[in-house]
Image (tube, rainbow, N blue to C red; front, side, top):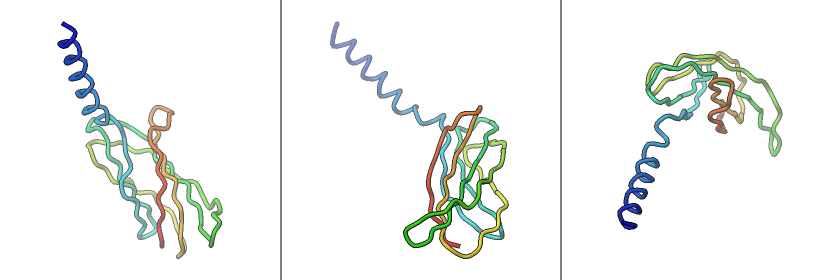
Length: 116
């Protein structure tokens, strides 16, 4: 009897691990062009409204300086969406902190470096 329960809970754990990431939001590539940041957001495939916040820091040798914070509220309709945020960046190196916010709570945070 113990062996069957162990197998049952083992299979249940595997099922949980396989499906755990299917409902989360994630950030893919972040790029800049034509005075726009484009943030790739992967969602669970069901329609939802999320906030995308980006904090931009300039990089100067070994220091970073807070440059601006911007963002947008978007309606995700599928599994992959590109969010476009208008912002002007001069040529240089930048560190971007990208946050996905759903229902007032931070769901995802990533750091990306870009060169303009």
